[in-house]
Amino acid sequence: MTQQSSLAESLAIHPHVEKNEPMLMLGCGNSTLGEEMIDEGWSGPLIQVDVSSRVIETMSHRCHQLIQNGHMNFVQDDACELSAFRDAMMQACLDKGLIDAIYCAEEHNQLSKILKSVSRVLRPGGWFVFLSFSRPEFLLPRLLQEEMQDVVRKRRWTNLQVQELEKILLYKMQKVDFNQDNELRFPPHRIRNDKARRKHKQNLK
Image 1: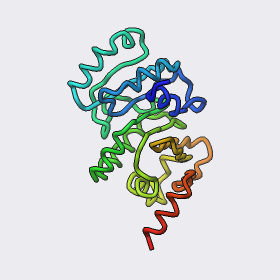
Image 2: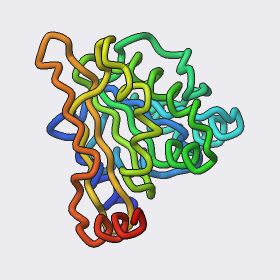
Image 3: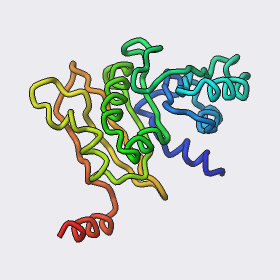
Image 4: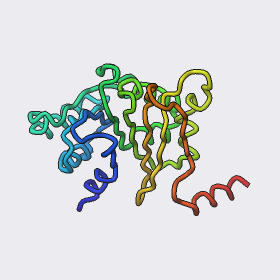
């Protein structure tokens, strides 16, 4: 099995999201992840977004058969806005590296904008899933700064999960469904890596 196939399987949105539900993929670049997910049985459609018109043109040409079959589409858009998409039209949103790149570039205001735009286009109860090399104790305070500080306005996110894969972390967070329990359930440091936690505590001393 290829590394990309393993990655597609590790995303493991199903059974939270059915494989025929519409999904948005941010900052697709020239990644084959969408094609691998189709091979794993996802029919989506998977709608891949990138800010670069050249990327969209190249990927549309490469995946023209999947586009014709209705399994995939490509849209030029800014992840900070997602202006091409209506409110609450997606059941899931995936990101393979955009969040990580923006965090490492210390463009923290853009992180907040992306989170807001993703929340807007997700249906209530929908999932945002992203991969990152950044540890949750460092990434989450920046990514969820407004969410953690705002104690008056209704929360946008709940049920945060962090899973440690072989070389990267898989983050999942669910858009609040206001018809259900709105309790904020963020376990930001509960990942199975006791050695890393001990090392981080030692660095703080």
